[in-house]
Image 1 (cartoon, one colour):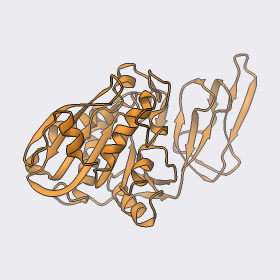
Image 2 (cartoon, helix red, strand yellow; image 1 turned 135 degrees about the vertical axis):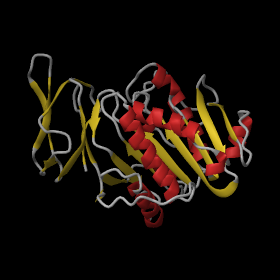
Image 3 (tube, one colour; image 1 turned 180 degrees about the vertical axis):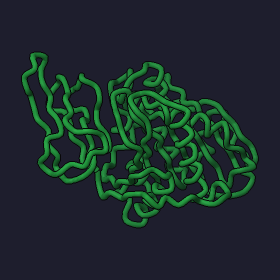
Length: 315
């Protein structure tokens, strides 16, 4: 499905040399996603940028809002569509990970369902837009309970050529780490399954945002747009990037209290203890060990933990 079909259905103009804003309705739900389309004066790629798939990740949401405001048709080749934010119900409810209507993690239900729950319908609508894109950028960040180092994830689902294209664009963000993923139920996995390259970027700490973080994010995404030929100018090469083959995520086996024993960005060896979950009487319920050698890309910072939630990720 093309951008124009969905945008025209929502009364958002898409004409070369024009910039338009409005709301994309998610059929069968009360959800309306604020969106801005910047249609360049010259032909080029269709770029889809989303921020706020998770409602508590603020640096990426502010970055998406500013990108939508700053990009002008005279600067752009092709078309850039920015959604800012995607998960408006979770954003307004100040929720981490999950949506208030169905308790689902939006970034675990792609490609979504046209007749599913609210989160599944949001994913389905975004997936229709993905299919009209030549490249997909999904902006994330440290959720309300997460601490992380800046890194970028690209999908390996669509085959070697698609993965390599996504990997090289990921490096252009300028973050220190780029890691591959084989998940097919997240945003970038959903795009890759229909042949669309892209990446998911992470920047931010514990549900906060700062001007410095937004500035860093803006510079990185603008550099990617130059790499893709959407913006003119010289591409800044990321000489210090460290490529990682995959990311291993440790998940909670119990409800309770989480006690990490390692620090963010610390190198760990296979078998080293990462942390443990204790009950409300201080008794250990479960222990967590590194499944591989690597580096801690993110850690959950909240004392409270729920069974099934991520605890830490090792790149």
